[in-house]
Length: 207
Image (tube, rainbow, N blue to C red):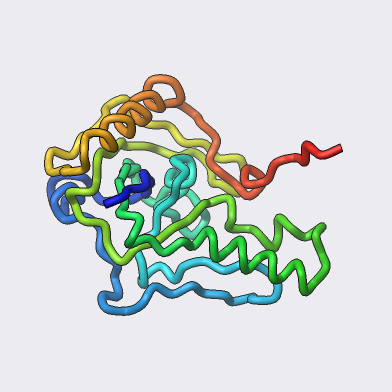
């Protein structure tokens, strides 16, 4: 089994009532296919209809955007970022679909100057799955948020790394992932910028 390390922001706790470390993540619409929604298919790429999948990202600072209130701020404190080893065979690659969809729009519209608007969600490197079993969840860390991802918001991590005793991910995958998360806590813990649309684009290095 091949794994990809990913992150998910969630307001449910690792322990106690409805514990993620023993229950894992399940989508709300059980049995329904994962749905890629495209409300403006000729203007911008789409994203996942939330009840049809468990969504996550390859980027920690994207996970910190969630869970999201109506204004993009934290609806409750504290929330948690969960680090997971996701079976690659189970991944719905939303990010790949968004890139392909965006390129189709730009090819038809001939409007490369609208790239950030068209590719609005590509920065999130979003992926999805039907479920994440609890033994594939490696660890969690509490976090708080100030502001939101659209106005230069930040997030701060708690200094306590919570490891999942039920995790069965092989050590060669689990240990480097834990080292990365410990490094984030030790070195990039407070007032880090949330990911946003511009963070998914880089200046050209061409001449």
